[in-house]
Length: 273
Image (cartoon, rainbow, N blue to C red):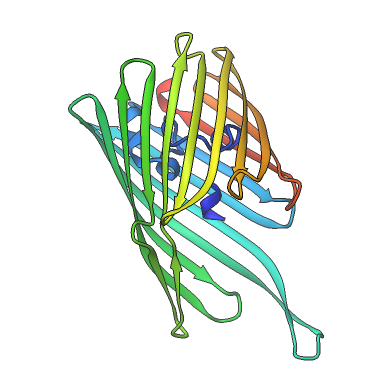
């Protein structure tokens, strides 16, 4: 679930956010983006993935100090299950839970680039008496190309992250590498973005998104995600309002195969006061 990303704003843009990464969810998409934030922000998100009872939640905070952007976040995904015995009978119910505690740090580099990193501590619980933990690392970079264009790169779970179970088993969270380009037009009222994912050397999903700020207080968003080597695709839509530094966003992910997902999130900028 953690690979799906967080924040209704980014998800409404089809997840094309690696080169944007300018809100409190930046740590998830590109930790370098935290260096763009000059205030203190609180953020939260909740959703039921695909309407299947897979809950996905996030709370986090970001702030700036000197030339640094600093973030701390907590992400949780859970799904209910039921034991099935050898004869096909139903046994005890359980809840599989995964969590990640994420610490982030970012800084400006020569005023033309930003670099950032995440340290992640993974926790998992099978709900059946076995638990696991392990560390992961992300590295991100943003480079400005004039006033209109930004290139972003994010290496998630660099070299893979090992999760050790108490029972002796090991799971590996494979590394995912993202590259994106964002373009701002009309005094930043219109943002166009595109990202490409790589799972190792294999091409992953491609994301294309747009955000149009109708007025300062209202933004409309849309996107498309291309999967399976461009053979499949699904759309995303959403909107957000901003009142005195309180951002409330909604996204609707139109995934016919797995099911549609409604995402709600909020962000509060103390600088907005």
